[in-house]
Image (cartoon, rainbow, N blue to C red; front, top):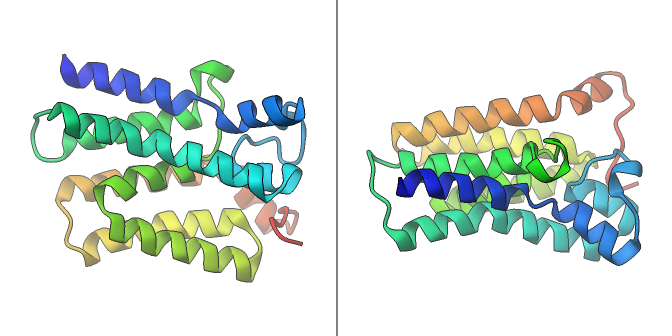
Length: 197
């Protein structure tokens, strides 16, 4: 019962659409009607600028980090890491398919980073650096995001993480590809928007 409640709470926290709320509160616009139409930090950066993008990125990261922190405080029990991983997946699912905006949402990368930061800080930091380097060099946030999440899977083997975390890493890679399918199509057609021009 305790785990089920945490999973539900994690989904609700993950569903908080920070990009939508920040754009509405500070600029009185619906960010879904501008740029790529996404509520994530990348589109916020293109439309509103760095400060607002940073605010959204922090909020989205916390959506992944805080439910796991709460799970640790509550000392939830289960087989291996599975309870924590289910809580983390629920937060990412909330961001991707938010109940507050008709079950639509963002790409889940920042929230995924928040989850990994709690579980394996080294993997999170290395992946974040790879994302940053790729975005600076290639200027495509989508490419940096997909490769950064793939790197999390690779590092799960490098750091000899438990098998359940490797399964988790496979799931988040599938979700990242699904959420970026439009970006992948635009990349192949040379129509993808650059985050930095």
